[in-house]
Image (cartoon, rainbow, N blue to C red; front, top):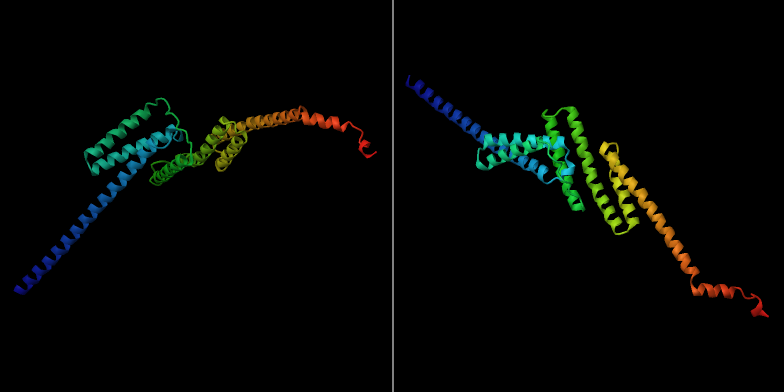
Length: 258
């Protein structure tokens, strides 16, 4: 009888040990998962705020700006539930105020000119973040197929427009410096940059604008060329050497050979 009791006791101890081990492992996994989720949500919050603050405002239409602000608030709430600190609370309050200001539909934010390739590259990096984020929303059914197609297509257009903006700015600078041929070349590059998204409604308007500028600048260049030719011809005709040559040419061509 005592042997059975001992066996039961040993078995109980083993079972308790196994159960305790499983419990501790489960608790450790839950702790790791919580840390992982906090890290993920924190990174998402930072990226969403970067999109709203660092991406040139002309690259976000009202629908996208509202969507990002809404997701920022949702992310802040999820993060606060996992980690209710003062810092996260400030994220939450800021996101709520942000969303409210966008919903009130105030004046459109002032455009920030893209003047060099470094700015365009940073804009494309942020657009890549937005592109990835939209795909995640689509996978989780936070946006439907129609919205996903609309938003993702618009982001693709913006990525190409960031390149076109640089060339357009170079064109404006060249025109201001009276370098007409350089300006025409820059606008041609802007047109080529939008070639892959030429069917996008906003790209259509951009392309029409660039081509109109090219036509106007081409007329200016042709007029300049004509003026230069006329001035050169006039200079030649007014040259004393030219007059002397004509006078010499009037002499008898056979006189020197008599």
